[in-house]
Structures are given as C-alpha cells and as structure tokens.
Image 1 (cartoon, rainbow, N blue to C red):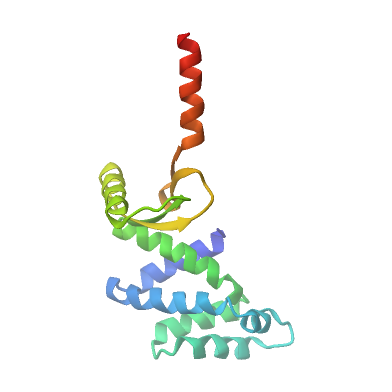
Image 2 (image 1 turned 90 degrees about the vertical axis):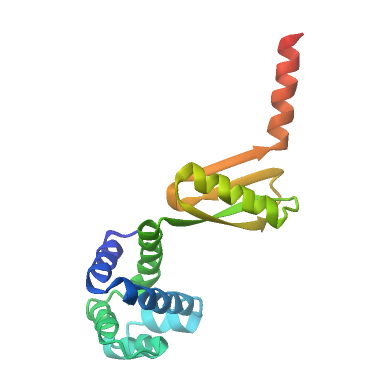
Length: 175
C-alpha cells in the first residue's frame, strides 16, 4: 500500500463527517470497479489525454453533486494521481474496518460448510478478537479448512493431511 494513498485517505477522514464517509465509501467502490474496465484504465494512463479530460471522466462515473468529493478528484487529477484510486479505495476500506471494528475474512475449503457452521466460526473469531467478523466461503482444493482474516493478520488452518501425519508420528513415538 502506498504511503501517498494513506495520506489521501487520512485527508478524506478529516474532511468528511461519519455520515458522509458512507457516501465516500460507495463512490470509491464505484470508481474501483471502473478500474476493471480496460478502456477506463487505458484512458487514465494515456499521456495524450489531458488532466481535465481524465478528471471529467472520473467525475462522470461518480454521478454526484458532492463538491468536496469532486474537489478530491480534482486534486488527484491535478497531481497526476488518479491511478492511485484503487490503492486509496483499499486503504479507505481498511480504515473503515478499523473504525467500525468490523472485518471480513474467507474460509477456503474443498468441503461443504453449512450456514450454521459458518456462523459458529464467525462467533468464535468475533469473540476471540473482540470484533465483528464476517466470513465468506470460497471453494478451493485445500484439503481441510483454512480461514484468513487479512486485515488483522489472522490465518488458521485445519488440514486433514497434517492431522494424519501428526497422528502417525505420535503412534510411532509411542511404539
């Protein structure tokens, strides 16, 4: 994460009220999604497109009348930093998570996990870390269960292969 993006996010938090931050969050998310469009990123990185045209393109995606947000985009454009918007969005999301003490994580497994099991895991991790933690299931070819909560640096895994190896080792030591 760039230090420059962190500074812009800090400025956003200082410039907007808590109520306004929700609007900023949705606007940044919309802009971040625009970066998935190749033509959009090509235009923003094109040296032959002037800063005003780039700014107009970004503001047109926002569909907002918010002067402070438009000024923020103008500032980014003026300094040639519109391409930092995805970094700014990720840092903004992280800071919102910290502020609200809410984090999202992922469960990687090749097994089916039902809603009740997911909720139990969420409750356990929430209680352990004193935060509101939401987990999403992602199918993978991981043999066992792996849980990652990146924002707080947590990774837990329960591997069937590792359990079998440890049991075999224990049995061999006992003999």
